[in-house]
Image 1 (tube, one colour):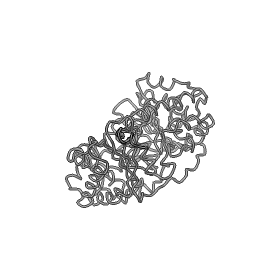
Image 2 (cartoon, rainbow, N blue to C red):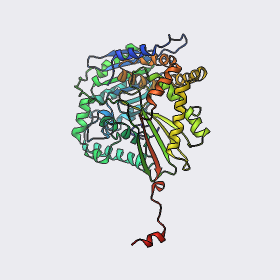
Image 3 (cartoon, helix red, strand yellow):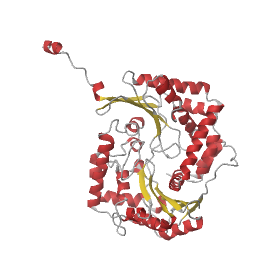
Image 4 (tube, rainbow, N blue to C red):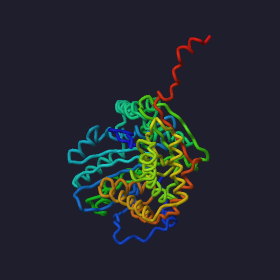
Length: 475
């Protein structure tokens, strides 16, 4: 899955209305909250300049996690500037007039904290965690780089080279080169915003200039296009007061209206065969377009994804790896994020290395058999309960750490328009029925909605050498 950070970038593995959230809650008809269900405390306030602040107090540890999510990602980067959203994320760590390069890291890490960032299609997030005594310092640093950056040609050139080197390391010189999240989008989607290479071409990266950088910060990095989330050892009153103190004077800035990047389901299968000079065995990526965020099918698809490819006990792993022994391994991806963190067209992708003695058609046929069995027979009560338990365990485990909790709340606020979705998702999962799973499997996991890349070692695709006797006989 695409993981963007300024250190090890892109390795494997616009906000919505409350009405949409309510619509999903109604459509999913969630069960009443269990008495023992963990309710994440969520307090939200919007400052006068448009910055939304989310506070989740928890005094169990004298630490805090911070996430600042900007509602801009690869989908909104300028045309002819592929990879720019990610390049800009790197530049956010290169200093400001008040805090030169190196200060951001030094202040946070010297107190025992750490920080990072990532770029996705619909958002860019910046995260920090440290003892709560460092909270004001971290907020000052975040507000400082929201205000402005140190725009200079040397820094831009340096980070252009860094990103290009990451592409060499993670794509060009890696077996399979991220084709299961990079190339598959170009095949499955029609609109440029969804299909283009978010890592960027070298030409586009080199053509980025300081005017591009200034404009991107001006247009997308204002407080009115951001969410600040703090989780941990802070009260709502303290958190809101500090947010006002450090961010309140930053002026709101107009944000460009995004283009229409919506797409329906595909109506005909798309296939592509690619050579790979570094791969030792062939691999396949099969992807289907997902339900729209906030639709009644989103929670059932989360259960379906767990059923099909959620680990060694899943149907596809047991069927293709253990049973038929066609595949050597199997994994799944939800685009570049998760089933709950997208705000535009996204994909459910199954990725597997397979034995050279078989072929992609055999793997796809085996997948289709497993899908057809779900459509026909559904899921037993016991299996459905186990699937839900696994999903809920993952959901809650990810909220234990303050850093991840702050980040999830910020993303939910930015994408759904309501951080309280964090407490609604468990109910939506618990309400999923076998009929729901059957419906979404029949609707989305169709051949017509499927895009497939068959990635083969280059030697397997090379034309067989012609016998010398035949070559000599040619006129």
